[in-house]
Image (tube, rainbow, N blue to C red; front, side, top):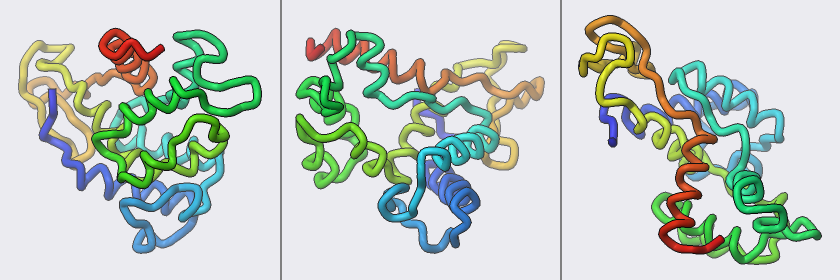
Length: 192
């Protein structure tokens, strides 16, 4: 269900703020299509800090693993990454399906079988990360897990709470969403 209490624009604004604070840069230099690595200079530990800030802001759990790691875990070693650390054709097909809706054409074209898996973090943009956050927020349950009422509202425009009892909404976590998506995609497209 697509929730409408927290907008894409709000998520992007908060994500830019988290990135600026983590990277000690001015939020004004961050564009929606900025690569966290190439344009903003983020390193692997910075992703953890940005994720932590986002989790605290929206009361969600971001994915701890990249989609490639989940492909390997679910469908077997070598399914996504070959012995030389390069992405397989199956991994690229899944990545393209995953990114089709929100990625620019240039990002999709850059995905090629045989590319080094270490090139993937450079493809993460503010927009793509915001899409992952929205995917989690869109798992908002129909009704409150504590009182059973459908009275959701926002608290400070970043946290969804029950207007009836005040309980914070419980969302699916990012890793579970990726696994669900992979299973559904496998069942539909028979890629892996």
